[in-house]
Amino acid sequence: MIFDRIAAALRNYRVAVGDWLDRWYEELPWRGRVALGRRGEQVAARYLRRRGWRIIGRNFAAAGAEIDLIALDRATLVFIEVKTRIDGEIWTPAAAVDARKRERIRRAASVYLRRHRADNREIRFDVIAISGVGSARRIELLKDSF
Image (cartoon, rainbow, N blue to C red; front, side):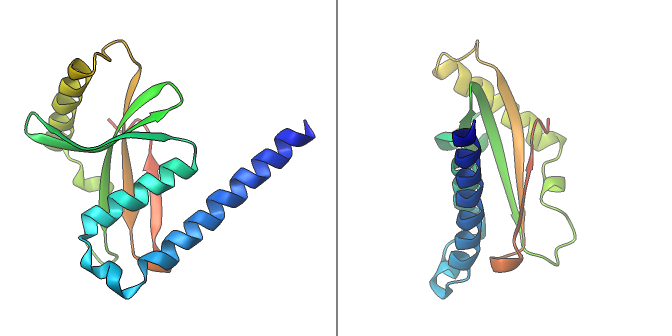
């Protein structure tokens, strides 16, 4: 029991330190050369990995859509749309995933499931909303968004 508490505390510490390092790293001048969307996907992948998820695919394109990240959250196969915005923009990142975009992602996910013979797996569609940059960045995981 005490070992479980110690392990949980270490895991929480690792997540907090990793989040702080990500913010610091993003403020480095040469990071500005990487496109905002691509940086957001990198940040989201690190965010999920630190929380114990396993990233099994990136930028899967099919059926006229692209799925940014495909991950395993325990036994659940999760299709993740990453939306990154800089503060001051009118729309929130999550609002950018409209009904048309959700339908395209669902079609691409069905192609992925057929290709990988994973039709019988439990699946979920999540959105990771990243707003701001550097130390002001906020990451929000919207589980089972659609």
